[in-house]
Length: 428
Image (cartoon, rainbow, N blue to C red; front, side, top):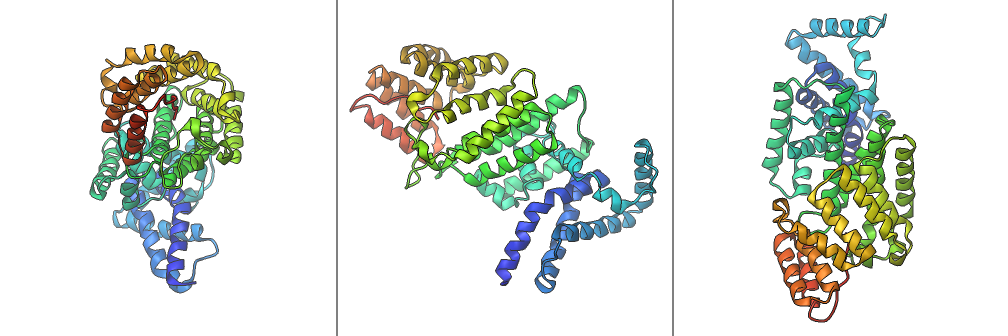
């Protein structure tokens, strides 16, 4: 194995093991930032020793052992080890355990619970959305600051500052390293799901840059969603989000042309849709529904995505059902963006005039003032109604608002096409 191969292997191990390592350390140290520092120290030791000694048979256990030694050394230096043993003893007594407190054993216990605690800590509402995303990708995804910055097209120092501030805020606010219970769980879980879906959406439809999609972000969000579904199997909305991402991700190959150009939903080659991901998505949606209760926002969006996934051709799409599902979503989680999507579904089910009426009502909505999809949808519907000059102006306005180069060119093409005839609505 070459030095480059070894380095790649170590990076792969880190991606797999780092979250469990940080989670176990954070439970004992009660400090996410310190836990990450100790885990990073273990990684440095691996980078120093493994090229000479070879990668261990159980690299995760090796990293955990190295992190344990560093944690104990830190506590000894700070004269905190005895107090930590006392705290562990009290925790064990509270859990009616009879074993003698053992720092090593405490680090090894409840890996699944520790990961769930880490998820809730990284996604705590006390942090901004940007900070939650960056910290989650760093702690749970094992991504470097450089990788996160590159994925979101922001300067590396900006991401580094977000992560540092996030860890300081968690420490300053004394955010408990625990899984919330009772009434607090729903609100906190909503924050976690929001972060994962933000990551997925940035990969699925990049807000800026030269690429229409960033598949690595979609894959990372899916990985985090699947982990969360294993850690919280009784939460329907977790399965709803996984279903939504699986089904949307199934279209990835069909969404981009040979030169990287966007291909929108109604013109995609459905033979390129990944049937395995669709089956996984439908199975996750079934799990969400089997758990009972009213459908949440993610499960409703997954049901909408499932309508597209089940249609082998665009003509088979059940737009009336999609419109009804958007009606339900608008009642449950009302927002101008949901209303805009509902307008597209109604236009497809009942004609462009019906959809345009709803879109016109949104043109004065302040939150959509700079949202490029509003003039894009309006342009679709105007074109369908034969009002090509107005449609062209709307497509040009949409092009001026988007920060994604690929999408801008697509919108300008559609503006130019208005001179030659109708352009059908194009749901994303």
